[in-house]
Image 1 (cartoon, rainbow, N blue to C red):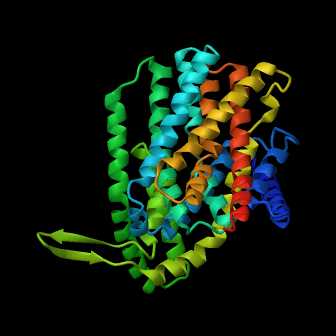
Image 2: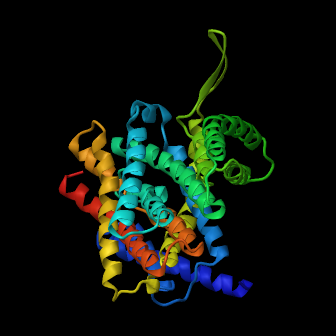
Image 3: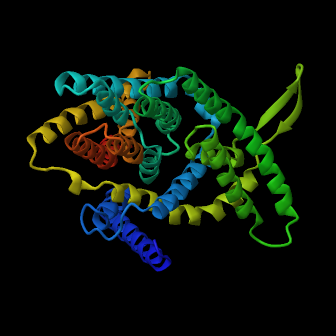
Length: 404
């Protein structure tokens, strides 16, 4: 893409995102729906002004990483820990149920080969943490008890999705999967999620000390952004999603996060939370988040090329209908596998449904590698589109009707 084209496309995306999100908000619709519709409007599905270009996707990834950084800053690990095993149960059930049902429906009802059926099941396991978090934020529920369960479950779901994608990719490339490699990736991801927040915490204390003696303005924001990008790179290096790096960096700057290093029975060192630093950084980074995160949601809509769907095919619609039921019920049922008030169970189940960009990655990989035929790919695009667009509206209606 030439430079002048990039400027034009970026301007179109920003204007469309703002106009459509404002319009949606004025009609009582979650603004994220407006941004997704903006992507459908200006993308290949309708006007064709913007294509899913690599440069735009990179900017969109910066947006989602910054959004996960904000989520990390708002996350109280002690409160998340009080949820106990609930996020794990929701993540595991929400992963296994759509995967298993998707495989069975694909292989038994539509007679797909095993590899194709596995890819369909993998596509249905996805949960888009970015869309989920944004919807809860739009509804003013991001600090609720159910949101803590959903955030924990969505992070775990993302990790399981990466492992499933690695497994399926090995099957496509080598016709077999090495469980040793998968175990190694899982171990690296686990170590990353445990150790990185503590390392990032130490880095944040150094940044705080440097900022107090800085001779020029902007040091806090610059160093924090550098740390977000560095840990996102590190996440990719160990096989984890890049957004986990942004989340870990956010935890480090959180006003809730601290830890102790023990020597015997006594704490040798204690690293306390820094509420003042967190507040200053939040004020500085929020304008960047409001600028870049809409790019991510618009690009999700741009990536959904609905012109690729054969709308006249009854087979496509039958497949899409059955897979949509599996996709929705598999995730929704996960909310009812934990002991919570019925209100929270429904909210958790609905919040886990959005597929978004994660489902698209599975579908596009399967299509590009020749695993999916055109009809299966078209049916999955319909499922991804509906499971991305419908949950925000359903959650809005649910909280309003429940008085939440």
